[in-house]
Image 1: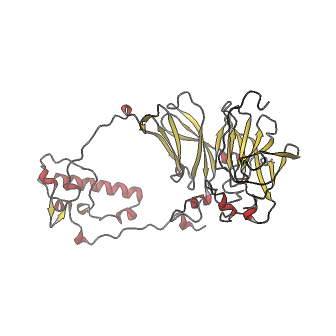
Image 2: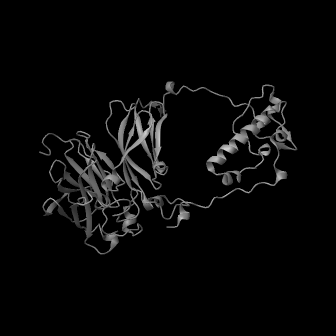
Image 3: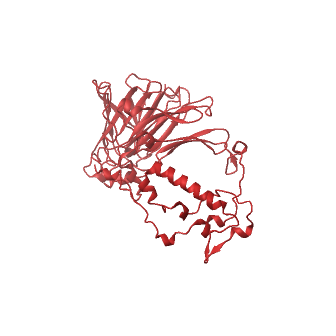
Length: 430
């Protein structure tokens, strides 16, 4: 890989000719020259400090080298001229208006954030804490909804994950989230940075695709574990927690068509499944609509390493995640990947409120596979369709005991994405 993608040659701003650089005391004459003297000393300290951090050559190439001739204006008053009057705030030399030295003093306001209430549409949201992913920022932020104040943040690039696109977050219950709580963040990577059509995007971005278990301790956000590195499963889309006891969580990935169930305490993989599609039509545009066979396979870690072999982008069928309502882009062949026709975009396990049932969303088939999470093999028991003009359910056929199942899907009326499950009357599921 071309190293210049990540280490571009340093660039500098051409220095202005000496004649164009005017000392600050000439640009903004005042009754007292103390501000110029203090600014010169402060400028010398600033240049020396930043040069030590960023490298003398790169930094000094951006500003004039003579401290006494710094030509940029400070965005804040470095000193207060007690003898100045409003007349001093508007000074002109040779028809040029002064920079910051000619501005009035900045009004300072003390703000008590503890006494502030965040109102959204005139509504006070209450004393709650929300943790949000910064998808293109590469990090996470913990925010107090009562005040709007940021309580903590973390950026994955500081830990070596330079391609991270933080996606979904789910937090475990906490008696006092202000004092601390744990949460899981699924992180995408690879070519997903190209999804947004942004200019100057790295053509060969890092693979990333990690599952991070994190904790906010009341002061800072900390990475407890990179679950992907521990298990070998790089999954980067929806995350959910079992509502029954919050002792397990699931993560799915619609590019790999894989979901896995993890133990909260040990992060051991309790079960993992992959979904593969074989359409009845050879035409990609009709590959899903005309029906076909969905194969569900329980996958296991390597016996020797104890890990799966799906880190980063390994195992991806398509190179870019399907954006919401972008299933038609895959049908049109505009989503690149090694196995477009075999993709079903299985990207989220949704729990029933009782915690026993989980529905894996199968986007390209407009339905979901229901798994019995209390069964020893976490077996799929039925396929349910979201579409009113297709059969409500399709039977699951066990091909290999506890390992492989098949579903014959007659036809697909429309793709589907998100799903939820409501509480059912007693006895509805037996």
